[in-house]
Image (cartoon, rainbow, N blue to C red; front, side, top):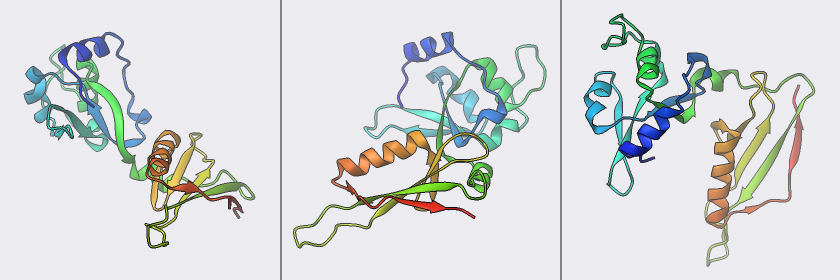
Length: 185
C-alpha cells in the first residue's frame, strides 16, 4: 500500500470512524503524511517499506488501540489511541492475521453442520514429482457471522483466502476434484 499526500487527503474526505469491536485483524494500516510521521511514532506505530523500496506505510497493532494516547484530542483532553487516530482520520484498513480472540472463537455454527475442504495440488516438476505439498482450504460457518477460510494452520477472511487461492493457482497449483464435506459433531 502506497499513499501519496493527495491520496491521503481524498481518503480523509470520506473517512468513516472506526469502532474498536470492528477490528478482526491484528494490525491496521494508517494513512499518514510525512509531516505526521513523528506523531504516529509516539504511538509505537511501525514503518512498512514498500517492496520496491520507494515509500511505504505506517501500521499499528490493534492491541494498542485501547492504550492511553500520548497526544490529547482536539478539546485538549486525554483519549485512547483509537480516538486520536479517528480524530486525525488516519485508520486506513485492516491487515495481517485474524486476531487471536477471533481465531480462538472460530468454530462451526452448530452440531451436525458441515464444512467443505478444497485441495490445491502443486504442479509437477520435470522429474515427475510434485513440487511442494497439497494445500487444504476449509470453508466454515461461524457464530460471529462472517465467513472464514482455514488454510493449513492459518485462519483468514474469505477475501484473503480467495487471494491466497488465486496466488497458488497462478503458480501452477490445480484444484483437486476431491471436495470433502465433513460433518462436525
